[in-house]
Image 1 (spheres, one colour):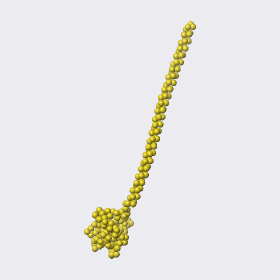
Image 2 (tube, one colour):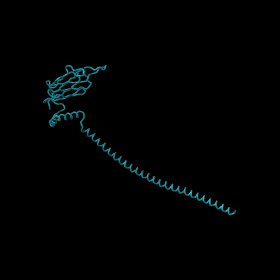
Image 3 (cartoon, rainbow, N blue to C red):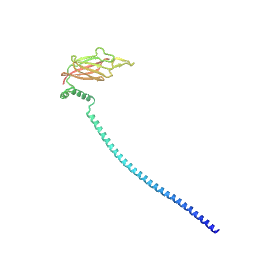
Length: 242
């Protein structure tokens, strides 16, 4: 009987040691897994930190490059603006406007027509502000043509009919909005100067208008002003040329 009791106690002790060993083994496995997971997590974290640090370095480098590019673009923009301002200044200084532009275009036309440049220069040199226009001055009047008027007394002639003058204007409008036969002196007018056997020239715009043309050794200067209703008055002066 004592032998049986001893064997029972011995078996219980072995079972307890076995359960303890199992717990220890399980605990060791858990601890090992935790340590392994920690090591893996640490390595991954280190890699992620290294990646982020590299990205930060890359971003800093890119920002520095963009700042440098921005400085270069700003410098290029300032240079381009300076060139534009220089060209604008040159344009204002060198490109004629207004009456000077009209004279420039006329000079180009005369040169294109084959007129010698030395002759043009001579004529300009000989021109004066007043001119010697002591000869007789004529004043004539005629009706201005409109879309509703194309009747008689709508031309005048000067220099023994060597120069024929006509005019075209816009019809005037009465208080009720109806268009009239007569021209409106407040609107632009086109005055045509036809030379006998030659070309025609014109002056256009609001009255009064001024025009000049040369026939032989004479220069004819015209002034066109509004006259009686439907008419204009043309004054012609004859001057030596050049």
